[in-house]
Length: 246
Image (cartoon, rainbow, N blue to C red; front, side, top):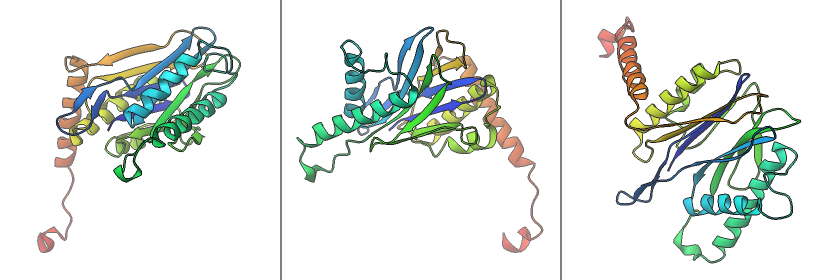
């Protein structure tokens, strides 16, 4: 399992992903879930992946390999919509290929989910959620973020804090707290966290950062958040019916 989140905000785009894979308690490893296709001044396309690792790795490998050949690929498509469609088609291609050779009685889930976002020169920055079936939806000002993977633990803090006008720096803090909540509640998600930000219409190289176990800032805010929650809980009043019910 994994956890990925991406936001399309007024200031720009934010992408974050954990790097743990889990195929049972004896098979835990670290793999990057963030994949960047970038040509400064022309395009930035970021893919976050979750689901069957063999499927998602095959999709990324095919997308990269095809940028070296003629035909349409991520480095020459004219829009992010076309990029999301290409990723969806590639997911269907890989799942169809691999599932044809599998025993249907094994119950293997070949599905893979992707978040695709970035900006191509000549259009606005955009963000898409590509489902395992290959279809997709686009983020909007009303719904400016997507999650894939183990999303439920980190969703409440994002729902309470993040809006389209939220500054990128505040969104980064909220995202890190969202990851802390997920990591605390689910052992299948873990550090390092890959984080990337891009300012809308800048057409400059994206800024990336890896949060590790040794990151003092992450350790500080996760402790401050835990302390703040405990203090806030301690100030909640009792109900007048507690004595009879408790």
